[in-house]
Length: 362
Image 1: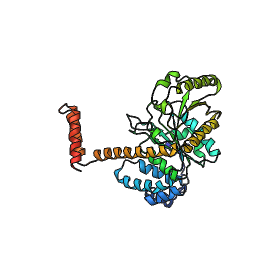
Image 2 (image 1 turned 180 degrees about the horizontal axis):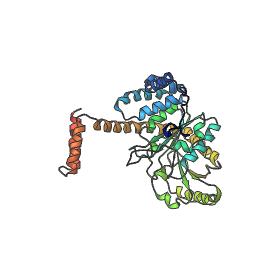
Image 3 (image 1 turned 180 degrees about the vertical axis):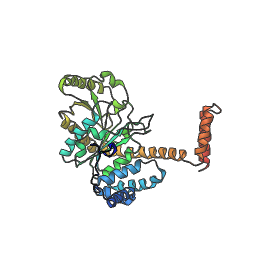
Image 4 (image 1 turned 120 degrees about the vertical axis):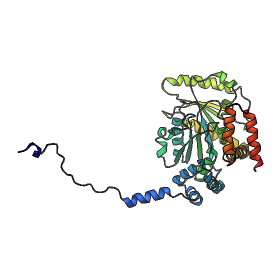
């Protein structure tokens, strides 16, 4: 018998063909549905029916930087506006590592247990190098994200300053129209400069940890001055004594600030997002604040001031967007940038020339 005619033990036998496990028809339907863009009326109707998918798609639309999407985004916002402004807006900030996401999950679960509908707008920092963002807040809120009465939307901060995303204000309106009565905004956590979030919330909560500051912090103007309450987080285990000491120090620091127009005296409390101890007391503090500011009409006055502020901010943003997208400015901008880099013209002269040309075309 020839060697070549021998069959190897490693010879693969012809197998049985596996049946198709995916229907081509179903796949085509999924692809078509994903490509199909809902109209503004579809999104508005879905939001008013408390559809979280429609809410998510609407927020994606308003966050889009595509000029073609602006008119549809404005239609959605205007359609939802009559159903907004019925929530309590709470801003939560603190340095990175203070436990904002963990606190918000514990706080949010407490609120949903009380029958509240909670929307969390979490803002993640964007890289100045890659321009990317992790958007991992849902990972830290694994229990809250599964709650039927909660909605979590992470957004990238982009080029926006102040600890919030470019369209956080508009996202609040959509969440309110979708039936969420408590809006929580988790800021980037950049320290002393998160002023923008203060202009879009009713209550501003500052998270701290023991050992991160002392009475001297009270002299600094900025984020401490804006806080309506300071919560010392991670008050568990060996940190309990340190947290109580930090509470005393921050209470002393708050006396260095002038009285607030709201008539509210900021408080300092401790809590543990891990053991949930002190979480209910935080909500009690927030509730007392709203009771006071609604009774003395400061709540409505602050909302009116915020509306004026965001009208002016929208004008600034729109002017900036129109300038950089003007068809005659785009090529001239590139040329002027090259001239500035080569010192052929000063940055100030180039800017004035471009702005003069832009306004002459109006």
